[in-house]
Length: 109
Length: 110
Image (cartoon, rainbow over the protein chains, first blue to last red):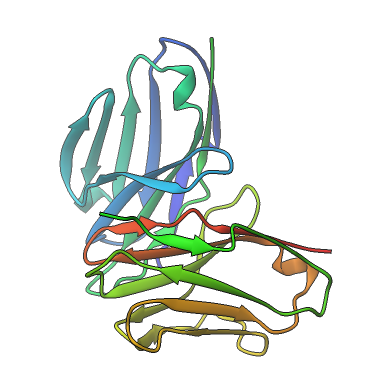
């Protein structure tokens, strides 16, 4: 089945620093989503990005499908960015997302 | 547009008790998913439906777990005889293309 690996598993930043989260997946993905989860909160979709680069606010997602990798860049981090970021990928024409184990981000003031 | 809704938000049980979780997906979404998310881990798919049909339930512990979506809209996930290892958050998601998640039900089995 689809394997999704995320790195780093955890990251601690000072407010204002940038963060780079990595995702590697085991076979060609037809769908790649990045999610954010605040402790105790729901999963919120940040990007649906099967290929290329997408931006929203301080977040940038870049997926290189044929290299089976995706990244999430957070610029000028804020304390409210703290939480867990998940990468999930889907292969083929099915609808079954496979999630990574998540990257826990802590941003200190 | 309302998001995915789930109830209850929390449940605490003794081992051996039964519990049901309910999910109302986003209107128009044909695909509905149930995930189990243990603490400090990523969501793990239990079962998913397209309309009323089960597409994949290979990860659903069939001896104690069951899931239905009889009219292709709302869905119920039931645990017949809960075990301590079932302690987790149970997430429902729906999609037409991109998946959207509900707030989850946090289950504690004592």
